[in-house]
Length: 233
Image (cartoon, rainbow, N blue to C red; front, side):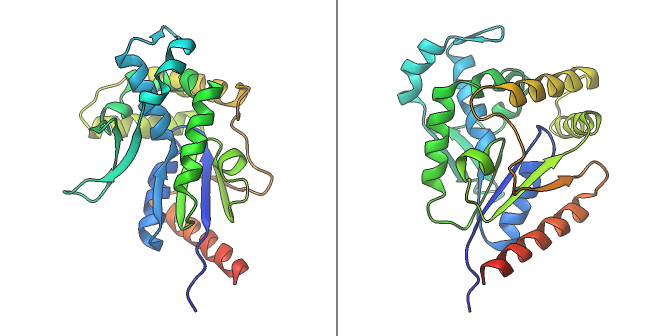
């Protein structure tokens, strides 16, 4: 008998490695990976490119008038097979990972009409099941009935070091203290925003990966997937 296809929601704090684990699991079990955070980063990049942000203040009325002009999709890179984020037909995968975008994404993603638009797009993507999606509110808002929900956490220092290492691998030099400050700032905004704040769903399984290797994390996640599938059969 074929395995049932389920929806897997992975939520948690920034720089916890949610995307890395979600991508790895999706590849391993043959599911589609959707990077919800990349969608908010793409909107943020659009705002920056169109001068809709001044400091930490977003020109919300101007952004609202631009929303119909923002089109985000995901396409595999022909060379690597990895999923890249496209904004209005342009590959922005590298740009949206920059500190320039990281520093502004939380105030943009806290805007109610932005979240409403992104959630609607995500739910449309997930109608066929067989998906893994990570973000801040996937298990609470986007897919509250997901068959498997994971909530990921790690210390701010651990997350900052991972972020620094990731950027260094891409040839981007950043200051560790600046990254820690950015992470703490994003945590505060994400947890206190009015629209879909970051919180652990009541039925989400907690994963603290502060002291786990990637292999240990992937094995743990695969075990939770197998348990979820067993419950559906």
